[in-house]
Amino acid sequence: MNAFETNSIREKYRLSWDEEYIIGMVNNFGNINTMSILDEADKVMSPATAHKWLTSAHKKKLLLRKRTEDKRSSVFYVSEKGKKILREIGDAYVGN
Image 1 (tube, helix red, strand yellow):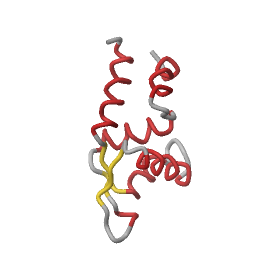
Image 2 (cartoon, one colour):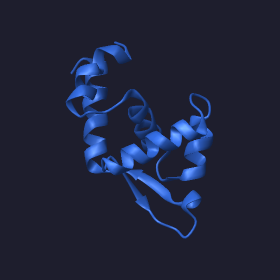
Image 3 (tube, one colour):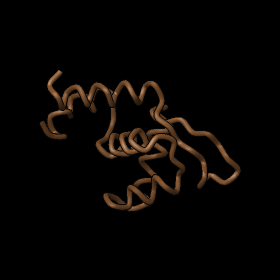
């Protein structure tokens, strides 16, 4: 199974691969602040691109944010909707 075989799931939820990556990363790390997300994503995409997809996933309510005065230290976590999508993608990878 590869990422291309789960395209139908991403299409169903109007989710890009980049958003899936960001949501999955936040899910793996647990509660993680904005700067840590951008630092970790830097291995795959530029910080500007990571911020774009982080913002998009947040607007779609796939990620929720605990606000702080400084947005760079705001903590993100995966919403129930985001967890449902990740489970569906994960099940597709293992053939469920």
